[in-house]
Image (cartoon, rainbow, N blue to C red; front, top):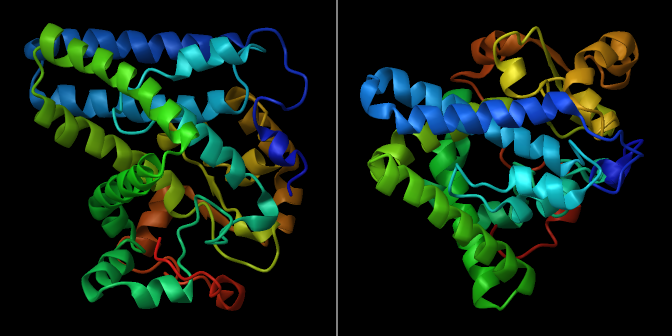
Length: 317
């Protein structure tokens, strides 16, 4: 497990009273979202849609920040800031619980134990149809991840959650009940107050927002024997770095998951040499390099390299 391990959540190290930069970020995101959506008719679609998609993606980065115990010591206040579902599809509580399990670094990329693993076990792979295998292979390229990834991620997430609800999973029921209330409120604002076509919002705003976030996750982890070598670093991300709240410096986040986003760049600069030594120089010079290398070429394999243990599983993901 990482140095702060599972304390990457709201039970982590002692926090300061209020982290005002994160509070200001929340005001900017929600205020910008309200203004953009309310005045959308006055803007060309080619301006409104990208700007709103950026805010929805930024909101996803903010939710990630908040689930790690920011910006206050109060979990109730933090949840109140993060829980508004402007992306519509992902319940905050489900995301929070899943992501904190992801921070068990000893299990990173393991398709059985890491809920954010992009790998399959050999048994999972054999159980898939040929079209499904093709779609997964395409998503190992950056282009495939951006085009196919959102539809694949959302549909499979819904399918998994439907199984939990059907089985009476109480945690899932609570999360989705809470989420449904939020979705109803956001939908009322978008449709009844602002007059936005819900299909347009889903396809022109939410879908691209998910694609933006998938740029970050595309190359941030890769299976390796050394724990530290499984987490990448993307430097010089002057444009997308702020959108991701500097989570592009991902090795720094996994070592210090409770460190506020605005402190990451300076801390990374001070510890860069050690981090690169520990992760085997698993570093990219910006997302331009990621695109040049992997836009149409595979970043890694679909099946996890250490498939012997993983082959114990029998049901497809």
